[in-house]
Image (cartoon, rainbow, N blue to C red):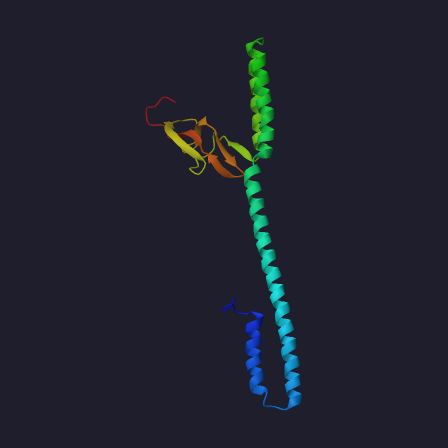
Length: 189
């Protein structure tokens, strides 16, 4: 595995070269140098082992993080799905009761189911955008048409055709609206 920088055997070769140049000195110095070389070799081997352990730990952390991300993607909607099951149950009960129920109780059941669904969505950060009477905001509203109105402020939302929704402040679907305009002369408003 030659060519890798920082390996103990390469460091040892460099030290050995330095040792040869100094070997002209007295025998006592040579013994001290050999001891120093041995100490440096031991330190180099220790650092190499530490490096290998750190590299292995880094690889393990990467693998663990990849598994965690994969699980998060796979099961991200688990709680949301579990909460929606209550809405499904409510709809199924309503359909079962539809055979023997009158229209008023069906309407009440539908309203209760819609409220349950809205509550579940809000619990997970999905919020309805119902901008009736608010100024038109192209970031959150989609203008379907403009209608003259003497009652509403020009540029405000006159009618909400379809509610919009945000997820934790991020737009999922813009509200479809009719925007008020100044009444034209001669319009009976």
